[in-house]
Amino acid sequence: MFLQLLAFMIAIGGSVLGGPINTPGFPAARVLSQLPKETWLESIVVRRNGDILATSLFYSSNVFTVTRPSFHTDNKAKVLASVPEVNSLLGITELPASYGEEAFFFVGGNFTSLTTFTTTVGSFKGFKLTFDRYGKATVKKVSDLAPISSFPNGVTAIPQAPGSVLIADSFVGSIGRLDLSTGHYDPKAFAFQEMTVPEGAVLPIGVSAMRIKGSYLYFGNPSTQSIYKVKVDSKGYLVKKAQPSLVANISSVAPGLDDFIFDSHGNILLATNSPENAIVHVDVKTGKSKRIIGGPTDPLMPDSTCLAFGRGIFDTNTFYVSTGRNISDPTTSARIVAVDASLLNY
Ligand SMILES: *[C@@H]1O[C@H](CO)[C@@H](O)[C@H](O)[C@H]1NC(C)=O
Ligand SMILES: *[C@@H]1O[C@H](CO)[C@@H](O)[C@H](O)[C@H]1NC(C)=O
Ligand SMILES: *[C@@H]1O[C@H](CO)[C@@H](O)[C@H](O)[C@H]1NC(C)=O
Image (cartoon, rainbow, N blue to C red; front, side, top):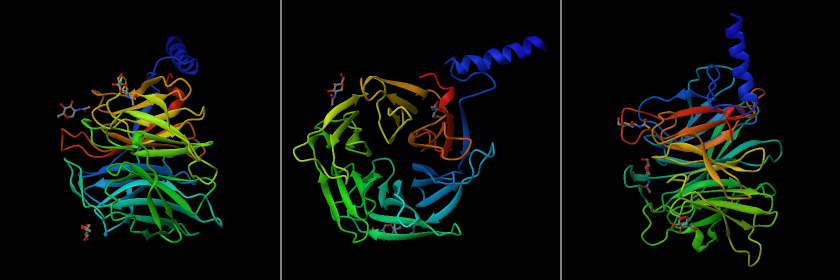
């Protein structure tokens, strides 16, 4: 008994002191929610009340929700809203509060093939998801984007400009700016060679995700496995003559690169997609990158697509990862994985 207790205390101490990942009895990661067959999640955000929202890329155009994720060990993802005008949903972001309203923006459109990623050019739209004060969700289309829009992917709000959002288009290879009140969309608000797909790239997917932090817009380009930053003003406009500079090249760590967030130290945590199936930590000062959980042979998070930190009372150190599924195994389905970052050694 005493020995057991001692082992238990060493186990706890080990993790507090930055000990091994996955301390027995205190696994850093767990499957929070296993979705049913034919599901594939693309983007995830956490509401101010702590509930999770996740968009579905394939098989349906649903927004799923998991309520109070830190209160239960097993959580069912429920359909919060369906968007029948399109067959796929992509990036979702919370809009900065205006008049106390809780609202999110997301993009969706039509994919015609899951394997070759073919899309219907011009079918993409921007939607606003609003919660009223009774918690009822309403989805409204706010824009048809641009006729050239062909793979709007990641989206991000602009902290000081609540009326606009930025949208990365992975096939056009640029970042557009959408005015939410008029629906006007400039698809090439940021158009740099660093956002495009270089000739001969194995993965023909250009800029896919971005975030504003401080006076920079950070963006990731899966085709070059690189993250860049470029100077923007407080309203999210490019600073005149500013050029992108490389933050990190993760090619030696992971073949893929999808959505990313900043941790409490201001460093990047990014989801890698399949076949890496991991979360990678990027030190934004040195560019040094390393995998912190998951991996090519780890069944934990097949096709990790996006992640978001908890906002509840008990889960501010936990990030939630959305996944597609094991691409080689059609019997698998999407899941949401909860990872306690304080138990990871990085
Ligand atoms: C997109 O898909 C939806 C749902 O299947 C369909 O109703 C709509 O007509 C399609 N739009 C285009 C432009 O193909
Ligand atoms: C990233 O690193 C790889 C391997 O060293 C190199 O081939 C590639 O050109 C680099 N990409 C960028 C954008 O620097
Ligand atoms: C994915 O599925 C294939 C086929 O069943 C299997 O061999 C492989 O181990 C799975 N990969 C992971 C990461 O679970």
